[in-house]
Length: 482
Ligand SMILES: Cc1ncc(COP(=O)(O)O)c(C=O)c1O
Image (cartoon, rainbow, N blue to C red; front, side, top):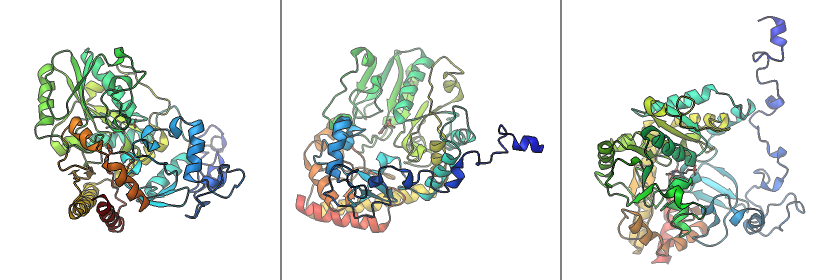
């Protein structure tokens, strides 16, 4: 390269990370100093923020607002005070804690309280919070630009990584959420088959696109809703809802059957023996496509996801959560033949300004690199340890509870038998025991999800120290509940 070219402002090589002064911010692409609201800066909150500080940060720039004060402000400007309904504590009562920062197995609220965290971003942060590999990857990516509107090397690497883990998954389209992934999978299945109907299972949650917002678990169930206002009868006219764990009768109007291979949005409900193979057979008989919604199970259950675990392969896979390493990310995968229905190859349209976002792909790659088969064994052991400890605590206190587990996936029900479908899950999730457990654990510094329909998310950052502390707290709580 000539000197002239090297100095050209249009030459990439001439500008190795120096075109913008990001290099002045090593490891601090989002420095706390740049945050105008110092009350929410990690550094400003050394675990000792007062809990009774007044509403206005501006009046007291160095003090943090309390959870209550923040929730009051939030309720004035955000519907229900939250940006996703479950976070509002509606089904357990009380005021949400507002997170100031998180590290490994812990989250810290704005009042300086520390919680052992089993929410873990509803499964997205499998390594625990702020894992150095992830934060470094994100910081490095951010320093090179946050979004381009052009393809990147890391998008290719992430697609290769996902397809290398799963036999039959040949192509991947990256999107920005699990909702987008399932919505696109349905559209692609309809486009590929030329059919309209889809079958979903009661208590499975597939995000909040219209056609799938019926009989959803998780937040929808916690609100006591069967579906959502604003979804037209037309939008769900082609959605058939079947009971989980029963293979439905299909016919040739069905484009696709979409299922959570392990249901994790009505607590944790394991697929009955033969359910997934039955679905595979039923789909093949009528030429319908089988969609595994692996937004939770994908790369949390095991190296190759549910297809590996159960030995059943769907036609289309949906991912989210883990593959974005805690940043917004989703993906659809399938054979090259099915994926070629998507634009620009095919006539099924799908697009996204932030699809394959460089920060999210960097985080996802950093996480997947560490998710070796050994890591899954370790996570299973962590979950098994917690399962055994919690079960013993409830048993010893005489509290009726069960802690189902599928590898690293964990659930918790206050009933004697693990549910098998939405009806049996609702009976235990709505029996009134969970809110008491939730609040008493929270007051002892252990954060489970604020809703009985959620799974319990362990991470690779949970050590015996946190697990034993959780079990000890559970013993005390179980005695009070007995
Ligand atoms: C199984 C499943 N599918 C889809 C979704 C929707 O994903 P997102 O919240 O990223 O849109 C979720 C979210 O919890 C989920 O659990």
